[in-house]
Image (cartoon, rainbow, N blue to C red; front, side):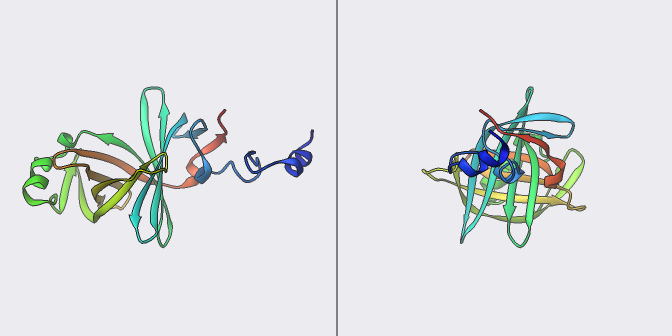
Amino acid sequence: MGLFDFLKNKNDDTLDPLKDLVLSKIRPGYMVDYDMKTWQVTGYNVYDFGDGYKSEEWELTSGNETGYLELYEDDQVEWSMGRKIPIGSLEGNIRQHIIDHEDPPERITYQGTTYFLDESGAAYFLKDGKEPKQEFVYWTFIDESEEKYLSIEQWGEKEFEASSGVFVEDYQFTNILPGE
């Protein structure tokens, strides 16, 4: 069977090799190269910010490393690649500051870089992109160069997660291959 026969006979569940091997359509099981490593997509989630604003997140693993690739579309398409970090690794007692003041400070330092509050709000997390939704509060910080970000999420009264990363472009991800 040739490529044109395949395309002519494909149904909706079949991968279209000419259109579906793009970064925004990767799903668990796919493989992709980034930063001189091959990563496997091991998870997919959606963040719902309300008013039609959503972002997609793919968990990527390479060896014992885990990264989170996120796609957010507002006025433009923004990609970021980050990793979870311990909230205690941020300078100052950020967890206690949020508990005491219901917000973090306007700027935070992590590994010698100062990050400034960019946006905050409440949103919903959908594991695998499906219900039930889990509500959380978030704060996003960016550095002065606007190349790095830091994010803090509050999932309960005293449960926090933090991540840091960089803004990336989709062309930095290559050799996208479908999974099983």
